[in-house]
Image (tube, rainbow over all chains, first blue to last red; front, side, top):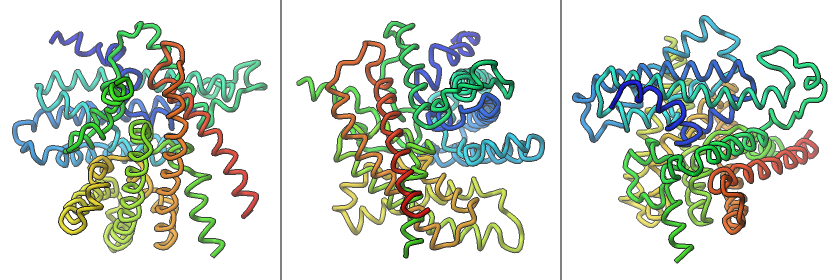
Length: 234
Length: 197
């Protein structure tokens, strides 16, 4: 595959958050402020690039039966490094991300890319894939954060916006607002792509390690869209 | 006694892991379509959350925060312990309690990477709870997950029959209805604070 395409596919065509529906938890949780969202995006991108490279370099060494635990250890190692670096140099950001920073370990995007891409491709391609997917994640989470912060708090990265900061729609920064904005963004993507975006077979955790780790019954697993639709129609 | 109930209710409703704290969204959106699947998944989550807390709390306080400070290894150790524990539970259930394995077995491997499980173990440490409170919080979080799943699967069965605009079909309309269910939990939270506050 062309390397430029490989880089760009993560941004829009296979955007991990808005099209593949991976990494929903941090997207919803951290998108209340633009600064925190960008911090989360950068942290996840760094972990994604490093873990993609490491896993790709080790792909011939790791036995395929125990690959998921191996991936998790590699990812957890990089997450710990990022955590320590952020604690040392950007302490306020570290505090505002809280437990979600550690939870990058179980972020479906990272394990998903390890399983779907890095375990099959070379180091450089995997690094490019990591950059693309990481930027796509950052873009999506930042877009949500801009909407939620501008309307919900009336500020943008801490700067007050004249009329909105006196009359904010404060529901936007709360949990229901998060779900609502996320649903709205996916609907917009569907509208723009005119239903051509990747179909919902990958909905949920198809790329998630849980399934990859040996879910015996994929039907009950998180891709029930198709099978259930058929049942109801039949 | 009142205190214990308060701990459980706070974890289950005021700080509901799915609808307020956004932990474990994947299974919430993925498995909530049918009631029996939702119940099976939630029972497995309750079981693993309590068990994981029962194991990781002593590990943290006795080993990691012992005489030599290894607390920076928290993330790696916890995720490995949870992964190994889930595997172990699955093997034990398969051998000795096949009936339970049949109903929960499918969901067990899925939970290894559920943010809720890792989240509850780490929050219990960072909030400085003692052992009993940690276990109760884990139980409460599991029950909260159960409540959210059951409520949401009911809502979803109605949403499935509706006909939203084309671009809202599937996930977007599900997320919008999740927003409304989440709104309801704010009302619950008010009741809890009134009762115990």
